[in-house]
Image 1: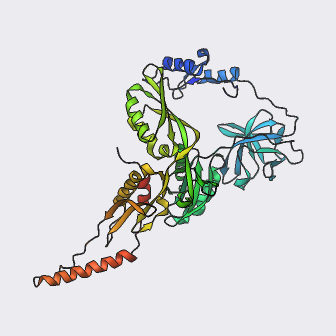
Image 2: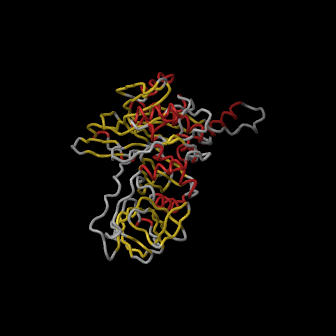
Length: 479
């Protein structure tokens, strides 16, 4: 609608017992202002109505424009990697023609390749003699360097280039950040290659090298949101078979320092010296929640717990509420969506948009195991939420870290102040088992000797934190 494009509304899943297409059609007419006569009803499962949708596309959508005699202009909108044929480019021909044997050039980096094959997508790749203006298809040119191909780039002919590159896609700003580490350090190179291939068809994913004392080498990644993070994690594990550990997700904060400069921080490791911070700001979002009206009280309580502001609601139709609320983004990325779905029994839908940055009281929460900070578990939190998060992390670590021959203190700290603690008790060896009778002082001497030995072990002993402990801290509490 914003771009004045034709819209064809489609109502799917009409074969389900609970389907109510007439009510949904009324919503489309009232909320979107679309003509109900253009609404297509279908069931993708049974195939009912699919032919009508295809006919509507042909009749209602305008045909593509373009001049096949102009210099070649090709927009890359997707790409994927084939281990035998290299990068397969999905593209739309805006102007000109391209055929096998042509030498093409990427306008962003001036890299040149000879075209091996062009064709159309018809479930399978169907080779063609040429592609011309208005067509959508693929180009194979033996491109082995994945980084040369970028979604939104323009392809032209090397010997007859177009005057200027196409505008491409709008630059996306990442809002959620997390570090990704392979469980096995041997998988680091595979992870690097996998992320490079993922960026072929996901221009919104950004990453850079990162390292952790506890987890080794990995990558600091930027995502559009928590759903985007989960999709990338699933793709890495399923498509590339790389088991991963993710650090606590964070957002980009603004720190205004006493010297007048502003620093953007998305990684707790880059937290400035507290003495130099004049003020801090965190991003706020406008959250929109659609739900049945019976869940209104519970959702309002959830939003207030997450420091919600400026709540508003209205009834788009009888029995349903549209609830809007301004929330800190950091409160949403933790476990907000899981809680929302749980409270509304799956009937609540959630959407948000970034609105601005607002003043906040941020602190760096460190988790210490046996007196040593675990950098992968550090997080930036609002001061009012610090103790709650610290207790949660300490309790989860206590469940996951195996007992040792000495006591292990698990602590949450802000600077030099301890705000939460759990203690893993020591395994006790029965050193008095061989003392049969005799004076009690013999047993006391052995126990004191054991106690002194454990004290020495505590000061020099290193605690191995299992991989499951890092994952446990990320999971929300059972409710």
